[in-house]
Length: 147
Image (cartoon, rainbow, N blue to C red; front, side, top):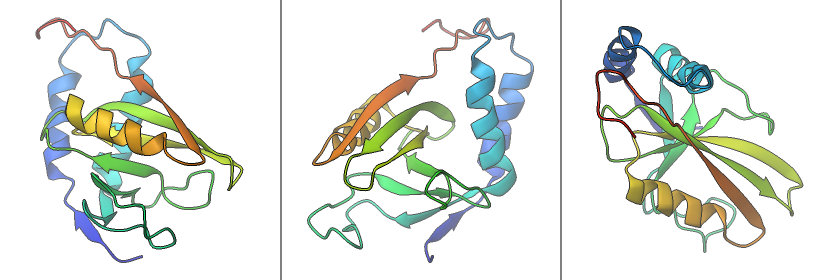
């Protein structure tokens, strides 16, 4: 697949920031694992915002969409990622989706997404035969403003 390969360097700052901060939510390890994959392998945006889906031309991506390099999801392709406009936010959640036509389900990572980006991706995932739910990363950092 051809696309825009993004550098991994900015995410190391996010990981470093989180390393020295006490986590209150023990479930955060799940989201940290996605950040580690992104930091180690980077990701590729193969469907930039405004691009039509290759098989469904009526579906236009309202947000940058791609995959984490060197990973594999249930469909045999890379783990999907939505890239938002909030640089430095890291992984803010995931979308769990099911497609009744393809008869599959997937996890889609929300990376550097604002609330508007999240709602845009969620709306896209609840279109046609697809349904998606949002799982937010709920972390309260001892050195940051609580959620």
